[in-house]
Length: 324
Image (cartoon, rainbow, N blue to C red):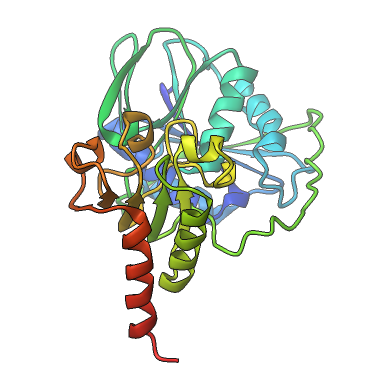
């Protein structure tokens, strides 16, 4: 039995399948790996894709109650039953890969808890040794890396490695697993309007963010600026604690991680806790009246000015540049 398994809920689609197969190819480095496809019915197309990607074993784990369910809280019981049915799982520290992304990371954590395993989460590097799984995780917004070693498994992880290389012809042993365990009910969601006029931080290309040095009037100007630029609004922990911006817009180690093309930081000192929430690939434009502020050490462009004069001038220039 292979020590490397890729688990893919079919309801997550072909993109998730390809991402997990690409990760399995990279970690196996040409060695053996197995694939577990979880669904309510088998898919010959998915099994063939897994085979062409190099899987030696393909398990089609089916539970009639799954349907098109894609929620990790429901899938965890079905996946755990499938993994328990696979021979030798739990010996020799097997590594279980989930498709990269928030859903995969959540399912990896749930499975680790469910099966008394180790949750490695979102990894930037993974490899198997004789008696262990070695992993690296990004920390502090990519400014540090954590080296992890798992000596007793199973270990559950996500790795983004691109699309897999496919063989024109390949063969694999394909098995059907009938699952009958009781599945938890899907969570009932209560949807309410947040009252926010701006889009969420996730996926934003331009983020306008304020810190301790900006008051309520300043955040009103930042919001107006974000609306005018087609951007969104963020804030540091001190700004959230002061009630200047809601917690769902907090950027930092205890808030959201953002990776915009441009991050405009106004009145933000530049603590490591805040910078951990900003991608290293983002261009930071810093505005602060303190020329010694730490934010200038990492900024691509720094402007020493009080927000009280800078923001009105910037908004005036924006209004003049937009017709009507």
